[in-house]
Structure formats: C-alpha cells, structure tokens
Length: 111
Image (tube, rainbow, N blue to C red; front, side, top):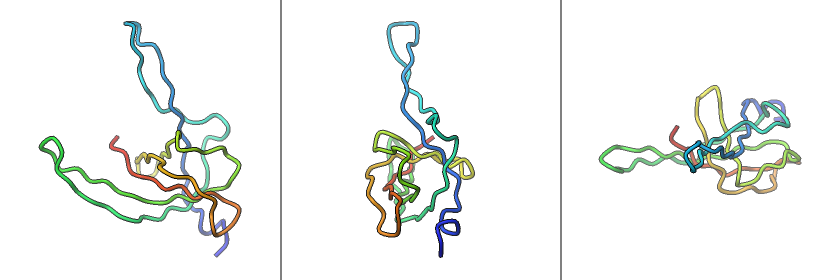
C-alpha cells in the first residue's frame, strides 16, 4: 500500500496561543498552524479506556497518526481531526519505520 492509500485522513495541526483577557489574565486557545490548513495522515487506534472522574464516566483513546516529515510537528502541537470532531494531544514524535514520515503517538483530549 502506498502513502496516498494509507494517508487518507485530513487533519489539522494546532498550536497553543494565549491572549490577554483584559483583566490581567490570559486565555489559552489552540489555533491552526499557518503553514498549511490541513495535512494528509494515517490514523491507527491503539487503545481505549474508561474511568470515573468527578462523578462522570470518561473515555480516553490512544492512537498513532503518521504524516509527512518537514511540517515541524512537536509535542507542543495538537492534532485536530475535523471529520470526527476530535482533538489529540501529541505525547511523542518519532521517525516512521515505514517511510520518510513521522509517527505521532497521541491521546484524545476532551473537547
């Protein structure tokens, strides 16, 4: 299977930004990285677990995204998958064993 067949998910790379809230504090937001609005990526789910937190059932999913190298992705970024309306925290960035890409180990973030 070639890259075009495997990388069939459109995702956005998000960067953390802070803005002054006008009352001496700052507001945190995640905004799309300017270089490209979307990237082609391969998605592979690895695990999912449920736990009780603050009296509510929470579900956390772990996965990998593989995308082209050269986009400057680091663990300070997040991945947003518009089709599924899901955001993922990047916990590790590694060179891909498959090709000239990077493999991103991610955890789903509650939106």
